[in-house]
Length: 457
Image (cartoon, rainbow, N blue to C red):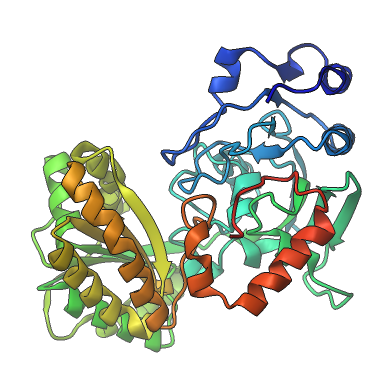
């Protein structure tokens, strides 16, 4: 539905000149994300400050018009698609790093700062922010917060929720508020900070974040272990995570993932194997040999074919080449990829890998498994190439989720729920839990204008 004239006039006052876009071409650029869902918004606004966001929410609430927050638009779940139309709030112009305080190990940033830009700024101070999603060059911190982004480093340093101290935000009522502190310890009331992280913009619009920083390690050692089959690699993951040294990355690729990477980028030297683990340890140079030796011992075992250690930056890049090539390699196979990011306890990873392989055989559809094995977080990508395979792939999804939940896992580790997994939420959460979540939503957003039709069934 078109926006009411009175609301449009109000938006022009709040967002003068090019801070408001209503032309179809401009709006179409904000109709989709990395999912295959799309919906044209009625207007796009570009806030530059907290007060504008408060005014925006108050105006839209008065006319019951939906608001969808957007950063880099890299969500794979439809979380940033304006499913109910209305207004998209693009935070790309709120991209300032307000403060970096190495002595307090924190940074204060606006939500439109890209992950890459933040990491570059922090590097000059000898620090980094732990979340490192594959879309780091394009994704914004606000999106990382909305979906609780992770990445390879989460195995040692945690995901977004573990690396935020406080937030400033605007609830669906139009009321601005602060949550959290500038301290690493806080036992003062409900933890609204962690509640907002992962809520996909359904509770509040984040306008500022205080992030917990981590010192950059003095050295990194990278190893690549090839195995005869996926089960042998999964068993090695369980052994690695059962010993004292926590790797800073522990990535898994199955045989089909390796084949795709090899075909797409032959020069990368991707080995032929049943499965591969890419392992990194970090720390001070004098401790690295001991850490690498401990991880190497755990990686050895039945099914190990080859274990290679990088000796310099060039060899490290070469070992990572297979993992880096995989996303583009999958797109070369099909435009109908179904990307799931399920999680199980690490000890159940072998059962998940076996179950996914059986699922691919049973439904006769290619499935590539890879991802952050140290967290038990696998990207299970179904790659249907024609109409029949697409139908079989979607038929396999409930079985995949049932398998994951039977293994005491959950539906998403870092992508979130968005549009694509809403219908499966009752499989993962009981009616009582969902009722509490709906009550929380009502408290923050009584008129349901913030990112409607997302997350909660």
